[in-house]
Image 1: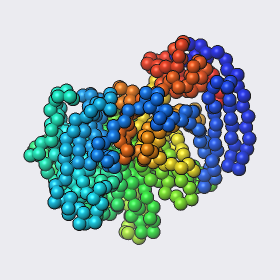
Image 2: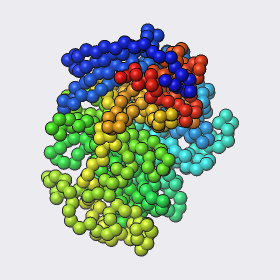
Image 3: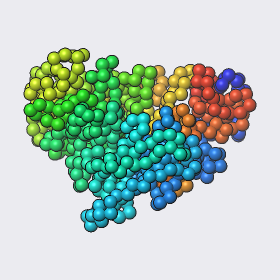
Image 4: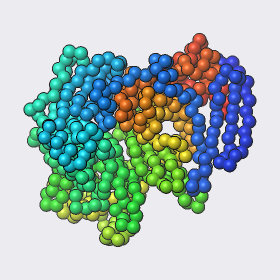
Length: 591
């Protein structure tokens, strides 16, 4: 076989298998110098469906990562990060970290270098009120920075919890990192209600685009009223919009995950914000948690007589991530934890990666499901769901649908007479008020997860994905954070019959003290992964090719798309057009 243009020598192989109580285990060994490859566990799920679980090829502790020169860690000079936000700006070479009472400007190439810092504590009286309300002085009664976004070329917009009294402000930033301007503009401090959560530990999302801030958060101190809002915006286009509060089946006890601007057509009037969340079922007989994808039009300014200052284009659909079982009984991973949008050549069609966990009391498990924007749009263009009353079930709506179709953006694409959402008829506005849910669900591209972890002592929490071109096709490498403080580096290979092969290339302990992974950002340009936890922020190289071995066969059998044999060593391979992941000898090893 060839890797990186260099031919490898044949490899001797020994393999055997046996059957145990939980399934069949197959071991394959090459000559003693090679890694143990191909160990596969077949775990029986409650539905009776078995799922293959591969074992990491390489497992590295924090000390081993440090010795290999693959990790650099920033530890907050105070007492950990607890809750934080990260802004990676590859274009300007900036990395910003929001923590308790502080915003740091870090060197994205060397986290260990001394950072610049802005101190931004909560007002003393707010801290005292927070303590009197029974909140934890250390973990809750501070200004935990949860929002960090680029506003324009010279300013950032930031918000913090403000000791359960959210506040926002602008930061001026320009020039070189070491001596440029980096200051909080105290005259711009304003209320952060509906822009930032009260509770530093509450799931939350926000995105700033075209100077508008879209946020999914709780609007009250107790965290009961959850809503998706739009605020800011350049004058005179400032239109504060939120979800309808009186209808609990719009959004019910939501935990927001992420939000993304996506163009649906070549007309910018059709641009939408897609956001992802999980919520409690509003059916009284069903206390389950459901995962959702929702969308609103960017040019939505609310209704004229009804839904004033409320979304008039809000629609939502269920995201399904499950393993099909016998007799139609699926094993569901129903609690969405994280979303990553992988760009494609067509900016209107990014690939959607989601991490889900199960709420089952029978077994513990996590899964990664992949969705296409085409499938998501098809569901939003399909039938609506209808509910006669609180005690009734959702059914397909079969009545007349008003014009223009509810959820459609006001646009010349459809009707030049309708210039804004205030031009929608009362019938359209009334319809969407009571029919925000789509009847059909969104299913994964392969019909099932591309990666599954069940009956392990951790759950998946975060995901980022890097696209790598190889000689035999295109591969997506997933980096998965866990609540045990580790990061899995995984490649999932889809076969012609839509089955998937999971290959865990690495399992990395990126912090000296294992703590749950709270955030991850990836820089394909710098080939770095930034991992945040309560212990700090770590910078980890995407590849460690030299650890795979000293001979060509070992490099080949690792099956790491980042690595190739250059004739002398296993090293980072740059030319995507010649890199090969599935080579002849790796295929032989797994047959």
